[in-house]
Length: 490
Image 1: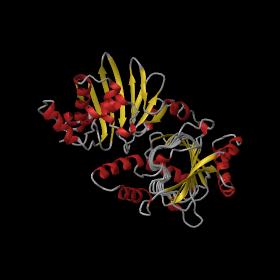
Image 2 (image 1 turned 135 degrees about the vertical axis):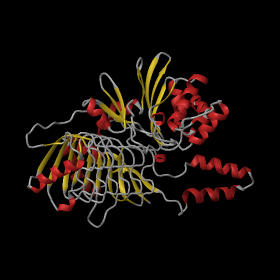
Image 3 (image 1 turned 60 degrees about the vertical axis):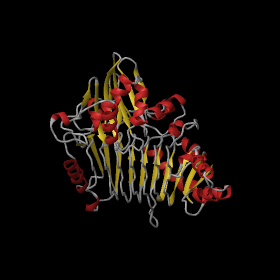
Image 4 (image 1 turned 90 degrees about the horizontal axis):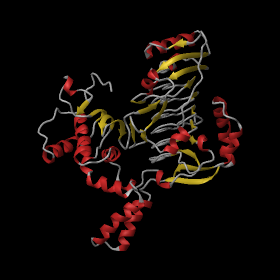
């Protein structure tokens, strides 16, 4: 783990002993973020476990917590990681895990964090990655024939192993790999991995007319693309793209139209933001914040995209052949004849379509076309939604939509209130106000076939999607004829 010159939060300074990685005996920790219950953990370690001093970093505290869970309380690696993740008890179906969560609640981490650990334990070496339940910190996992990788950006993996298989953790997920036992936990259900995260290969380009991004910063790369566009080149190819951010953000100001920019590699964050009249095509995966506040034309990604894709999208089309991450399509909107379309060929994680005010989001799940048991979305679909439409092929449990308080929890709370003397009629009236009154925003959720008007609208978009990604047109009728969960604002 190379973390030179990186000082964690809750650190007192910049000297080497305040820097990553922080180790306790055979446990080394690197993290991004800030566990919000740091002070509680310090007090627990001081007063209950006899520690007398700290260097003053939250990485150090995480290492101590892991040490005590393994060596003092005797947990195995996976149970110790589960304790640190601290999933709410209502999401834990395993009785033994629920018991562990209750017993070691004091060790649960909270707040935004992405943590990487390297541990020597029981004559084995473990590589561990874990993220919090809201995942505002990026983390990408990679694997090839010889090694496993964990980074905050995919391009670091691709620089070492261009053909590595890459994927992301689900929210509150963890990855564990052992030198002796191989991969113990993938960070996602194995069914998800087999269906949606295969090792992918992408086209390459060997022509002499391409811009070589090797060694260029984003400003220099943008200047090269602009120079070609001003020379009236209508197809601009860029090779060896490796993490350069902000590609294309300088182009709208020049009024150039009808230009296609093809990128071979993995562009960094904020690709094609504020795009209006350019077409961007990525032959690879893309990182966070693609097509933010885009007004028109098209962005097409032949692999996966990460988090916050199409934020405030208000025109044009964004096509993703593979999967997308968290908070996709948030704050999308439309104005008059400007209706944006965000189409995802694989699956999506949590908070899809949060605060959507307009436009259309479609999740196709092409890899599981005949397997309806695999959910295509995470939790909180359409939370805060006030307009627009979300189409998800197949069924979605209703509790995955919105942010309403689960009915069983409300019922339990009101039962306690009732025990304190509130009458049954009053309890039922209060329950109705909390869950069904005009003061509670809800989504309208339908499970049905597409109407004729919807097919008429979506078919040309879907045909353009299949042409871009060389998908057989025979799948179009299958997708349009399938039942969808359709989420709109009530």
